[in-house]
Image 1 (cartoon, rainbow, N blue to C red):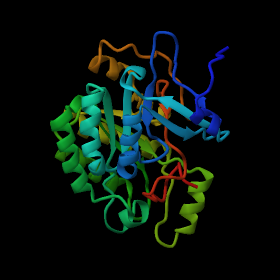
Image 2 (tube, helix red, strand yellow):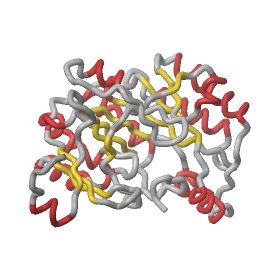
Image 3 (cartoon, rainbow, N blue to C red):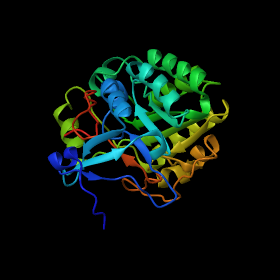
Image 4 (tube, helix red, strand yellow):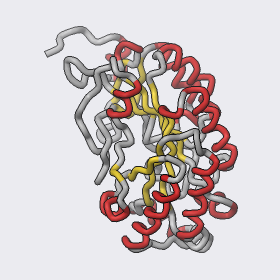
Amino acid sequence: MDTRKKTILDQKYDIKTINKVDENVLPIISVSRRSDIPAYYAEKFLKDVKRGFILFKNPFNFQRLKVDIKPDKISAFVFWSKNYRPFMKALEKINELYTGRFILHFTINNYKGKAKNILEPNIPESLEMIELAKELSEKYGKEKLSIRYDPIIISNLTPLSERLESFEEIIENLNGYILRIYVSFVDIYKKVSRRFLKNENRIKITEPTVEEKASLLSRMKNAASKKNIKILTCCEDQVGQMAGIEKGHCIDVNILKKLFPDVPFTNEIRPTRNECGCYYSIDIGEYNTCKSKCLYCYANR
């Protein structure tokens, strides 16, 4: 039992400190599945980096948690965002302090017109984000950049054919800038269903059959392979297998080990939801804090 006295800060907030994975492995820090920190909280995150730790609430019991994020206390960062533009200066500093130990997930769904205004009202236009993806690839290397086409939503405004065309536009524009792209269909949780029903006069969501999903993914795979881009599924085991697509690990230790061979990484896969293939990480985001207001959001009420 650790009998060390808590700091004044720990006493004030009744904070539990978490960091160790085991004696020889330091944690991967996920920033974040729960909120778009790079887009909306870049300045705050950089302050946390400078002070060496971050505080956040456990999403299940709301206990305050503290994670040491000094460079010698973590293995790597995994960033997630739909808009890295506000994070570019912070990323330069992080690249310097952590000797480049990070990878980037960049979601570009390429929704257009009315569909974009309904589904992703606060996200910049896709062509602008594609150009930003090129910048990130050129600056930090295409090995560190993964594009996410997620979630795929089929509706009267975004039929299967449109989702294929939009996917092809992305890989055509990013040919030579990326190595991989993750794909997933929308999961219609209760809170997501309520939002969809509330907006059914604006957009009518349809649920494609398993065969239709597999057919779409198969066409995407063929298009991506022509550009030497690997397509991976996120939480889509059945249709992925039907389409001959490899199951992805969005937090993938194998990619991290290739990038940073001298860093000891965990070998533990710890899913965050059904069919998830992610390796263990500490996610430092908080639910209900993302300002993107995407209609399909899983993280906001």
